[in-house]
Image 1 (cartoon, rainbow, N blue to C red):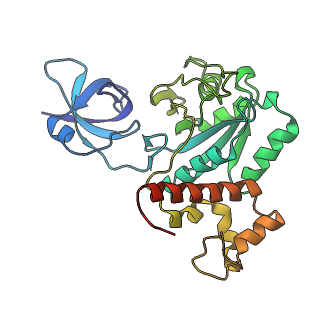
Image 2 (tube, rainbow, N blue to C red):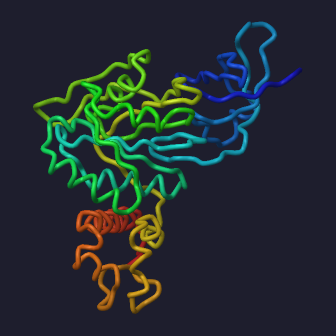
Image 3 (tube, rainbow, N blue to C red):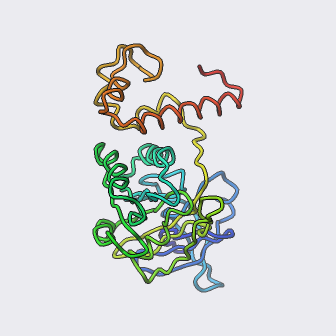
Length: 300
């Protein structure tokens, strides 16, 4: 029986929706042997599948093709760009969530662009204060107001032809931003709950949506982001600005926490590294320590 290759656009209730390079769409399930093995089949994966001779438009997935990259949170494969989407206000910008998502993208070696939505609800000083922190360390930042399409055109041009996943907490406007980029998408959007200060989870699963020769993916929001499986020794590698100052550290390796002579801590004190970034770094180390202590591992 002949086989085809295609990309998983979404998976839902055990069904995988696959499109071939010639844009033919199929609804697939997993072949029994593959289903028995431990695997992680994600939106964005390239797969090999065979057609079901008894049901037109259906197939059975035989194997997952090698991945270019894999992002753990949100779970996506083979991305060209990760679009880290945050709100300037309502909900307030969260440095720790932004920095955790950047860490995961750095770990997966996926280029990142940052979107700062709801700029129209914040002061210019607030917007620039956030944007400057990340631009200074090499990230592209796009301040926008999705509801009015302010600032959308440069972002639209940047994403053309790319396979992109939007990721961020609930209520920041990921779906609204995608709608502004491509109004034909018409994703459901939710308003932020005034009572609890965060958005409703309007997106239930990741789905790749065709756009300008590539794809855009909205992903489910979240209230917190956990970093299970991350080793504390690797964390400094994913704060890209640290590398410039590590030559000033007396010890190698240096944790940049308690050491008396540390180039990174000196750079924080002088303002060359943003205090919010260093605070996120310390918070992440603390979270990993607590997580691993709960698992009964003595690491410190």
